[in-house]
Image 1 (cartoon, rainbow, N blue to C red):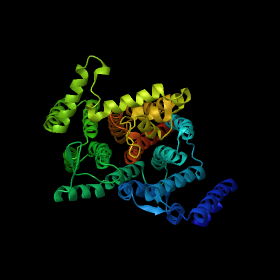
Image 2 (tube, rainbow, N blue to C red; image 1 turned 60 degrees about the vertical axis):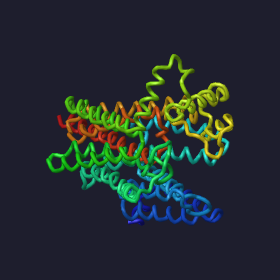
Image 3 (cartoon, one colour; image 1 turned 90 degrees about the horizontal axis):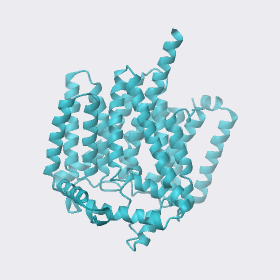
Image 4 (cartoon, rainbow, N blue to C red; image 1 turned 30 degrees about the vertical axis):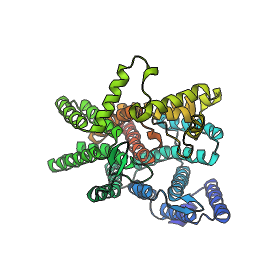
Length: 468
């Protein structure tokens, strides 16, 4: 099969593969990145001898394993996560090239690729170019995952689109297994840490709230599987599963995820016109929220902000010191950044310069704790605008699918993703989710399902009109 695949490629594609191979050959010789070389070799074998879609399913299902190996070095000081990210980027970029896939087909891709193109500018404003490039590659993975999902959904082979969509959904759920087992182990053994004055059981991976974002990523998938289930036992199973997820989130101390789940459930029931359920769910969730001391503190902070006569009088320690963080970033943006940096971004390491500016801990600089502020500081006004143009295009795709489709799968998918988008837009005020790579993987996958579904719908309409 490998020989046939190579024989069917045109000379330019073969040349491209040759250049990539030479590049990594030089890396092996000069930097001794043996682990990276092995992973890349293994990836090529999987792509050519099996199917690239199987590699994609495995990538989604094993994402949590990658996060567990976050601190493990592959070779030459390179972490395993960096090695795998490099593998993903190279393989999927190559796949788009050899399949002659038109990545500019959708407005979603055009918006994000324009964002990525302008996000190259902040690399040159970063003090550490390598570190900045690493962050740029994190952003690049979003568009790759999104388009791999689209390709798999619209692929014409023996499997129906429904089967492939279900496999992608199950891959996301499987990724939750390992971190959930670790959470249960910590909970049963009483292994916990104290942070911000509250107990946390879910310390795993690169940051404390990582497990909560796996739960948040999985919830819309379960909501979709619940909505398409036709048999009562299946519906009961997914309902119980989601209740377990909500109870687990209750124990993980991540208020942003709580807000996101609440918004998602509320919006989803509104779209389905389940107004009684909306009212009941809101009462239950608000009751649970009010019972949590940490959530009561957050409500108290919000009440204090609303009662302040002016923003300048707001206590900077409110919202877990987010007010102070936001003030310092805005102050740096307005008074220290150059005009060019304000337009195109101050670089992907701007938080380190703000730490120097504030005479705080340079070794552990504080994140912006807001998607909007993160994008503004890192990629400037242009980056902030283009990223949210991308989100706006996803809203358009979702509402277009919901309005036009008669397919029950697609209709339910659109309702779930619209609910997820509303949750994402609101909780982005309080957290820098654009850098939470595990969440962006699954967010991009569901977005890819939406865009792929719209492409299939267009094909159906074209066939219908041609037959008439």
